[in-house]
Image (tube, rainbow, N blue to C red; front, side, top):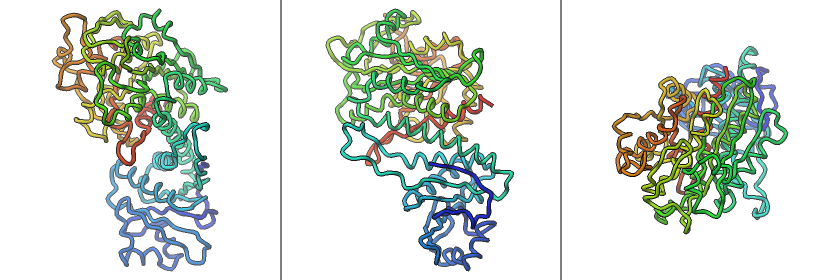
Amino acid sequence: MDFTASSANLLNIKADSLILMTGSQLQNSAKALDESLDGAISSLLKAGDFSGKASESTVMHIPGADGKRIILLGIDGAETAQQQIKVIKAGAAALLRTPAKKAVWVGEGLAEDNEWQAGIIARSIQAASYKYMPLPKRAAKKSPAQKLKSLTYWVPRKADNKAANAGLKYGAAVGNGMNAARQLGNLPANICTPNYLSDQAKALAKGQAKVTTTVLSEAQMAKLKMGSLLSVSAGSDEPGKLIVIKYQGRKQGAKPVVLVGKAVTFDTGGISLKPGGGMDEMKYDMCGGASVIGVINALIETQMPINVVAIIPAVENMPNGNATKPGDVVTSMSGQTIEVLNTDAEGRLILCDALTYADRFKPDTVIDIATLTGAVIGALGKETAGLLSNNDELAEGLLSSGLRSGDRAWRLPLYEEYDALLKSNFADIANIGGPQAGTITAACFLARFTKKYKWAHLDVAGTAWVSGAQKGSTGRPVPILMDYLRSKAK
């Protein structure tokens, strides 16, 4: 998809479709276009065929213009960033429902920040264009080619072109990163194994001077004494991997942001076997790792000036004769012993060793991303990620990035009283804390391994995928992570 900004005469830009954001009162370009069309737009408003309400859309064809169309997109009532993002998503969906090949999006009427608005438009179009791609050998037929080839974001002033182009480039990269994460998440678990993820991470580094990928085997992890991580992969015929991707956008000495993404490529629950209903969705238990790979994709595309290290512990959680049993005690890389009371609380077992490993990179900040607990869905539903952190500044930065990007999070506490629920009579810590506050006690577990640096935890079990007729990976939390990294890179 080709995105560009322009301030040329709106009527002279060659395109077959024009997206016009307007409310019930026509202003600026909307008013001028209405006058040039002999009141065609105002006639629709008067007739009630279009009200201008936020996210409403309708298509009108321009008389005598050989199939050219205007997509009217309502903006009345869209005052917050979240409401404006919903409007733009509705516009992207409406555009892609048409046979448009070249479109112009008029950047007036909604948000005042052209860079932000252009970025959300490019991201929304890329995300709405996503189609699941089976592996070539398994595909019955190729997916149809995307009809829309280019979009021009129009601004009334030439001085706004630079900011708009920057927004388009960034937004397209974020959208592409989301789609990369979605593709990995949607692949079946018999294809997207720990080894497959490793191969994808290695492929990212090919031809990229700023990117290097290293993959640690189980033997190498054993030498590092990652007994907690290896206790999860012990029950699977698929060997576990620790994937490390370095993106160096700044000089060598600049401290990196470390992103740790949980990648359980399939989670049966192990010996603590999950119920059968809905277990197919446990292929999505690697969406934290997939989102980190999506972020690296976006960093490469933007060439963002920041150092980032991605660490992805990748395993299957299976119940064979070698599997860890409830009541077993394992020793983590940090030396802390863990009583495994429930083998379905495996995400924290792989993350804790990855978080200990993160310290060797002398990080500025560490953020882990995990589909960690069902409890977060009970607390926040499917709209908002859970956020817990040992640093207020980091937490506030992520919350702000969530609001800007529309990929929102909500902070939960890490009080000592919750940590006390992890007491074990037979080890330093238990891997579950009882039936209450499951999201918080899971984060308290991780917090014991993150005392040497600034750390935040994003529990995305509710936001990383959707169920039902629209089942599929969402690509979240790529937007919030990229916005946070962008704020650090400035």
